[in-house]
Image (cartoon, rainbow, N blue to C red):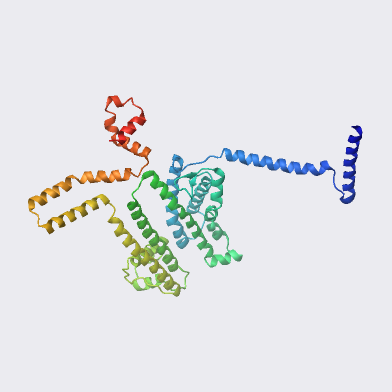
Length: 412
């Protein structure tokens, strides 16, 4: 036993000396210690991350009341951004003041919203009815998606424009490129669709009503953006003959009408509206090549939007009250049938009265068609809620189990 132990120790010693002689290797303990420390450190960090993700709070948009309130705040902020950002870019020079502070507050709110996105569940792309609530997947989905666009959207380009007047940034400032970069904030408007979807889940707006609101918002925002673009072209530096100087020379009027952001914006908005509706009085016309190109682009876009909106609105209005439209169509068909068959007046009166009296019954049939598409559990809940008022008045039904009452309600 002693010989075997001695031989083992001698072999290990020879191995260490051989390694030292060949490459100056370190002792075994010196080699293995850093590796073990690295493994222990990686294990510790992995355990810390797993422990952190285990207690990571997840907010469900369908259940969290806080997210419902926050969505309203963000929706108001997006409306402000949609109108204020183009107006600032077109008419206002960045400077320190209340408006600058207000913009930074908007950026801070949006930064908080970016943080909340790391805790908010999102719909499963495969099964859209299910929400993904795994923290690791939530973080990966946001960082691999809209995070970078949101990050660019909060960069304070107005600060760069206000402070950089020399060098390359000064050259970009003179070319109005830094001013145009402020429009990057409009990337935040991509959140509107998601917020409207959440609102519709909570409040159940009519899709026809939402479509009318959407088309109205498109027209208003389009006119506003075109007015800001046209107004910016009119406020070119002195020495340029623009549409604003031509209008002042041709129509005259008080000098204040052609100075100041709000006055110029009112003239630009007037031009945008008459261009959108294809009225075109001809009192405001382009004067330079840039203005001709801008007017061509604006009128082409607005004409397409106007034609699309008019056609879509006509189709939506005709389907806003489907039950009423179906009843009127049925009555028209009935009148045509009685007239083609030459029925007497008394018979026609009896048939019309019958269809008017069965109007509510047809509405009930339409309701049954909708409820048939629900799951059995939801059908029972819906039936119990619809009949709850008289079921609670029956004394021997009050102490029955809820499942029994739901089953009875479905049979009604």
